[in-house]
Image (cartoon, rainbow over all chains, first blue to last red):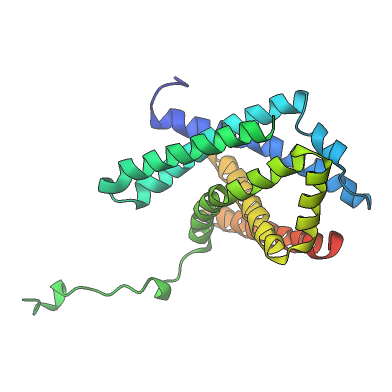
Length: 111
Length: 132
């Protein structure tokens, strides 16, 4: 299968691959936050900072890229299903702008 | 004009329809996806603040533990995220051809909704008891 072809099958596959990366990231981060509370303690600023620096920064950027891809593919499906063809291009353009701003903001916020 | 009963416009009240539970999960998956994306800027902002310095981190922590509207919004956000993740896992399992019969699909749908309910309760407990 051509992974980078502009086909429905490629979109289908990327939607799922990005979902699995996000699943791993969400489960890991949730556990890192939940565990101290389960021990009757709390999350400190230092513990919080470690989750977004060093190796975790790399994992975070991979997750961020997957989030962008996953959101684009998912929203594309929703928009093409519900938005009338005349408005579709405009809404997709606005979505693209929203995602790029969000991507840039998250990149800066976690750096 | 519209004298022929066969050609009269039909009024469809969508609220009178009874949708199968699998259809309700399907639309919930879509709605939660859009909702997560719509609420994300708020959490990007809070994340940015929390990583600025220790004082900003403490003020975000204080906000999270004292602001009721933010707690309710956070419970909604993370419950939506949980449903989206559970429904997504179910979807990928079915992509592998597992649990595609109607009975299995209905059962897995119920499992997703029950797990989401548990997540809703545990998040409520976290925001209104643990960090209250």
